[in-house]
Amino acid sequence: MIDTDELDDKFGIEGEVGFAELEEDLVFIMVSNKHADAEICLYGAHVTSFKPRGNMDLLWMSPESSFEEGKPIRGGIPVCFPWFGPHKTDSDKPQHGFARLMYWDVVSTSTNSSAETVIKLQLKSSEETKAYWPHDFVAEMTFVVGKKLTVTLKVTNTSAEPFNYTCALHTYYGLSAIENISIEGLQGVTYYNQLTGENGVQEEEKLEITEALTHHYLNTETPVIIDDSAFRRRIKVDKTGSKVTTVWNPGAEACANIGDLPDDGYETFVCVEATNAFDYPISIAPGESFATSAIIGIDDTPIF
Ligand code: TA6
Image (cartoon, rainbow, N blue to C red; front, side, top):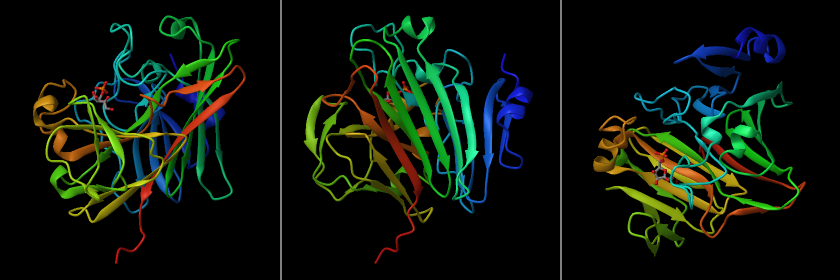
């Protein structure tokens, strides 16, 4: 049982960082500073809300999400680690790894010189993680809550042998409606189309989503923009330490079959993910670390 009073005593920052039990007794870190408000659940090290000041939430949460141990939270920023998608050899192991199904420890909370809030959480290998994956590791999630939200997954190999992992920061963005958006920044990039099993090239400058789509854009490290004409909002999704950008929307049919999504859920979110998978797993030697970040904010560059 996690004691929120103890966490408040140790890690609370007056008027800026507090701990609360929300939903079905999961503990959340509530962050509020001059730049933004954010909520981060210790279960899964999962951001469920990010509101830059004066803006609506950039993230989408399913109104039917579980908040229950053993099940992933649907929406926000699920952390997929140490594998992305189904496990390669054992279909009994959880899709997208175990990181989103475990409680993470709080390491530190602080305020940086730009008045941004910095939160660090950690997940270390244990008997529980070794039931899924044999390696010793330390995974650290750092959240910098400012005008932008920077989310970093840093993995350190603490075992005696090198290991590989795949991962994603599987962010759900809120939309006015899927037909009102286009995604810029992927033109000319080759993608693996998971729904057909074939590769294609993004021909159009603006990707519009008119049906179910699961594209993994390969060998790309550039930012993308989600342009929402009805919200008059452009979200900039930047990243580092990620070679694949995944764009996912389930479309009507698959959405209706996903228990923790409302039937019409697909109309108001799109996932744009900072991924390392397929031909781009991460390989780290003993004692080494690798970091993957997603940097999310409103793009206020004027459009001419
Ligand atoms: O990143 C895309 C994807 O792997 C899709 O194939 C889709 O299944 C989605 O993630 C959601 O996965 P989840 O396990 O959270 O239902």
